[in-house]
Image (cartoon, rainbow, N blue to C red):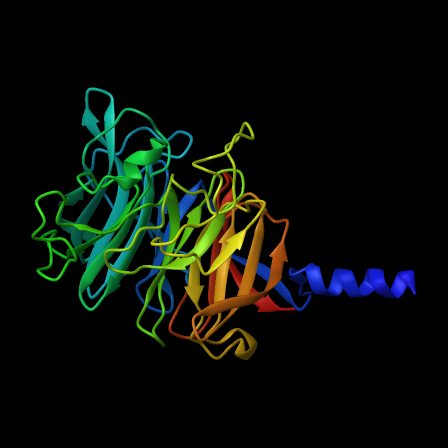
Length: 358
């Protein structure tokens, strides 16, 4: 009887299931600390490396081309460097850690046009304000919805500044693709808010994706020691950092705020991880190659070194399943129009891997 009770307990409370029907097959090698990935078409993909490189790779011919640029990317170290990349209708958008002078830096976004394997008219369309001196928590994911650019900006390890709408730090920003602010941003006419600010109260949101089924933009966010979460981008809302820590504590074990995981008036995360897994980027799978994944979430984990599926039904996430574990710090996951799924790993000897059935 005790054995039966133990088995029932494990079935009920161990929410993480391991799948054994998947594998990763390397389709391109010799990458160094890749960070972002965006498909031009089914074969051609753009990759950023933290060193500052922007690469165009053909997965069929295995050809590689470095796209030149003159962005002031700070020397890559720890979390800094060239970060996310997004291709859309001939345009390239990148987020990066910009040298703003005087040892101050910012999460910045540049846009250019890809013409004849060259980036032309490549220039900044956004710089997070104010620039600061430390080198942590950049955020930096990019998504386009309805011809508007959503971008995540980390709070640069400055904590409660994420509650101050007069800066971009610890926020989701929403801008037009030329960098100007949309007239329907929630506080565009409020002098106490920067017009680009769309959502506040975040720590380090390193994942963002558009769900084509419900039209929503969703993020993943790094908590402190515990409290990583998946949630929705909602205009004018506040996730609460660092009045709350979503169930986590500081790295020395001390309580953050009053210890609450959530408070009335704040937006509640949809799904949380305690302890932290260092959740990174995600997709809502829309292909047909993996029917069991369709319309659900596939996301990456850095610290836990896992590729994870979450069922997503009626705005709720559940049934966490580990698809792949142990290969390395999974940084990004993307899909092409054929429904193939690809990942990159944050490592000095990295590559591009495709998800396959065993």
